[in-house]
Image (cartoon, rainbow over all chains, first blue to last red):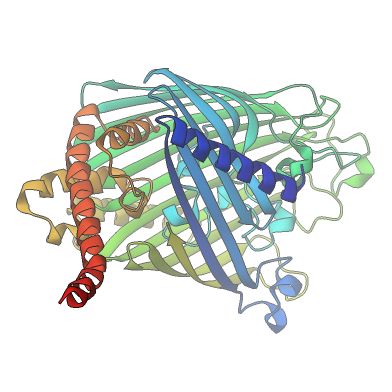
Length: 391
Length: 127
């Protein structure tokens, strides 16, 4: 479906829902956010990040979204979210929830399946830094094309079904769980697919599945309230699917997350690992000799640890350490080695001028395992200045 | 300094912040304007609802109906890892009820203020 058609469909749904609201007791809520970020990479040659750091952003990036939530009744609700970002206009969510009770909810439509804890906060308005942690990066990291983004670029909307629920044990312990079957990721473009194609997976032209096998996954997490102003959550997630049209190559993503909140201090940690099978039918495509044993996959790992601390009213300090490794064979054209890594350290401030308007600024120090072929640098610096508004 | 050491340092710093009760804990600015009777409910609202999103999301939603707030908060309570227990939901709803009343009162005052010049002019005409 083309972007204009999507816009028309969204408008029709909005009008229909408002018309229905007048006729019944439908309750709706519209919310939205927009973030404009300027990223400058002073270490890039000639100030041109594309020349020096492989297609890094060096300029403005806008991420905007509008969300409509409708509570049809106490059992049925619907969510529609549209985004404008690097991919243009895109429906990020379009799903219904039918809740039998707290412990049993059926979700159907287009949504980001339950994986990790970050996905719930992926909207820029819900973060104090302008960019995402590296394991969830989608197009903002330096050398993004070489790394093919993060381990599981967020958001990762897909069509499918999810059964989820939550249960409280007393007033202190919350257990969450989810299981789903979705279209999953894909790569139909490459004759010899070696990795997920995230652009294709997001493209509106490719919302249908071509490999005939859904991807499956699930998540469970436990939250323990340790007092009136503190809680801790720990979760584990997994996803498995086939990504090529001939049902030959799989991906398996596993993740663990831990977050701690004490008063207004947040500490968050996540770890993700993806085992990705590759088509090695043509060994000449690869940089290294293809091993007959365990030579047909690579492993990509990513992790982050983040501290968010209010300094004074409306001013927050954020410190983050994140990184990724990639182990396994690479295409002959890739500058990566078979054991590549990237580490990033970030320090940022966020100031809320108004309840709905925040300024974010941060500095990032990058450390790559391999040099930039243009500048020879293995370290890079990037600076962000962004504003985010909500309604 | 190696990356694992940096990670360890960050973890230690985070633990220190958390264990010392946050040396620079900054309460949301709205609480100072609230009457004493709703501050405890507001504290639960601010603590629980800011875990995933800013407080502007609910406060600017335009919702002033108690029944809809009940559905809205129930939907949030069921979010994974929300940490909003059924008991918390009651306190959050108490605050939102107060907030809605205040919003309605402000809107009513604004409506009256907007009408005032018209009424004054009409009164002038009558004289």
